[in-house]
Image (cartoon, rainbow, N blue to C red; front, side, top):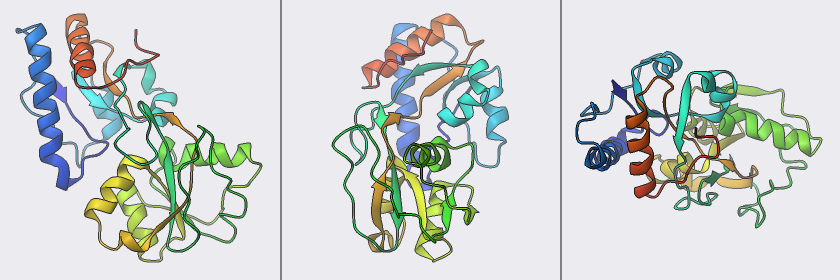
Length: 241
């Protein structure tokens, strides 16, 4: 069986990720002591992450709603939603993406779940994104712009990760990027020169990145992991079976 936390797997927080899994595993084993849960998180750098999520031996991981909507939801089950309240732009199980740039007027998250007003924000600017299948890096912004009848910039740069998108804006390779609020907090903590960036706006609130398991995972394991996640401050998923 495999357990992983690939979505926020920055080198600087690997120990924190492993500690979270240790806590979760301990809670789950307190409920069912004989569950065959892996001792350690699997290293996912260099892996085909979609194939990893599709593996029938996947007992625990975290995924993106964009990939789930494209078919992964047929192969995995949602366990719970993490709490994003510690991050600017987060509220309980909901999160937003920050639209970052090197210059412009700073914007706080809207007081309602709606998106910021993006009128004129992307005019003549090059947009960096991590992946077109990413809800926070591409899909959410595209949807919000469409709702406001604003075209998405045709001048784009695919970077492969939120961290790379932040760096692209810092180094002038792109003008703007959409970075999910937890990744933005990590960038501000661990990436040089983010103090020179500003947040121009925020996407609307959406459900944060869910914790998942394979649909083939034993029901006792699913139940124990759900209970353990709730005990650690996560939220029930509206789509959990």
